[in-house]
Length: 220
Image (cartoon, rainbow, N blue to C red; front, side, top):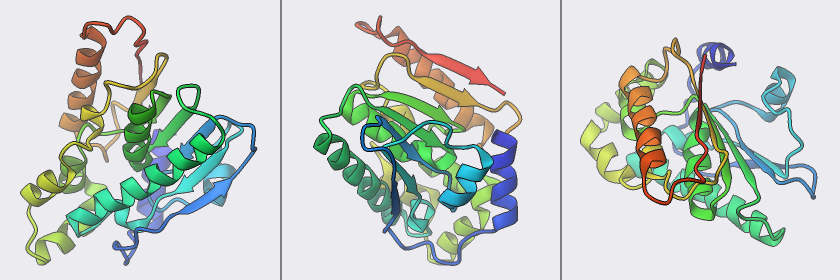
């Protein structure tokens, strides 16, 4: 799957618009407990055809283009918009800790944040530990980085804007049985971001009162 996500990024190109915070939600089975957050600029139809969405779901979200933006503050606004909508939907169905939140690639950013907020199980695929480093160092986002630099932004601006929202900082409240899938050969998640996430997961598992945190790190 990880290689297919990488190929998708290469072939579909980078959106010219990286400032739109509105997202598209595809509603599924009303009684389902699964929420999907898709990879960056990945249409639902493609994701379904490629087998990215094998489970019955309550809702599946396409990422807004601003989730990876040349304006640092918009990255956070886009993420919080996704999380807010999903959280309201889950609450309307009486779901919280019994929900399952699945994040694929960039979709793992809102997925981790949401799962941590509500105590749900998380399935995180191809995540980085920090969003600022992922945007600044990943080959997949190099065009967005150049746009940001042209506007006068530096890595420090992303670090300031995204503080407190990074996946590595939002593991304390996720549910037991959460799963993390990382690719050893994934060229689009910087090595130190993968290492940082693995260390954060291990630290979370070693914390007091963490006996119910059943981490599962799978590498491909």
